Length: 413
Image (cartoon, rainbow, N blue to C red):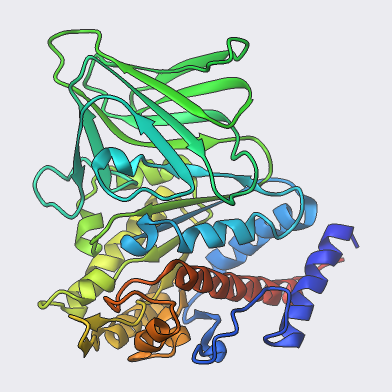
């Protein structure tokens, strides 16, 4: 039995035997329902069996990469919930960390950027987001785009905070509109670094390959024809060849299922990162719509699932139910239970897993207890950073327990 396999097996075995006192650090929150903290499979599990087999290769053999894409609204744009999941996964087994993956410079769109990476830019940029119906159909995986009409602008992206040292990369893809004579160039202040450039017009990106790993991104956007109207950026992928997890977070403040369905480039750009698992956390904004319709919501989600399956046939899909919330801080939002019912039907029909965020939090009105404990904000919709960290730890625990079930049942010599 390989040492790494034995370590993971004991890791999961201890977790299942020890309840709350386990190495997965399940948060000790008295009003959280730990009995609900599990992945629910109401239908076929084939895609998840395939995903867990991919984890075997990474965690037991130390080879390969696992790509996870998490799509949602403001819960995801701030990258606190997803950052905790990314950090936990990248530290499961030494030597299989991975990298950062897809990013978008949100501050160029005049909105909140995740703390963990710092985009510094020059020039004037305008933005479009998928919550605005007009002119949003060309959006993709970010749900945002930014456009400049300046003749020369720059972008620098560096990492900070307690992310593991040096989210380094040796290859990037700059996703951008192709009907422009603007030139995008990657460069380095270290003159010894060699960078090769190649544009894939059909897939909508310019790729840069470095001859070594670097930890800071430098881009230059330059007009080459005075007749051109501008350069539009859709997002950036930071890639590497090392084994590990790449956890791509794609969130838009206020986004609903309708918002993400407007993004016509979504499927093509999702295909570029080749996800093994797609996590959908879309629904809190749907549920706060006065005209919320469960039937329409289910139809919209079915289309999003179909797009994910088209982008990456065979990928596993995880649906997370809504966090509990209030309307105008005063009235419990009863649509949370309806969203949960919809997701269970989708699970049975499409073979998705469901993590019942609503139930794990404690059910209806639980957000008030989270607020009292300093885990939710006063709007009784969003969480504080400790709240999102707790949510990430709980979901990580549920995902690893599902993997533990796979280890126990898989046929091994």
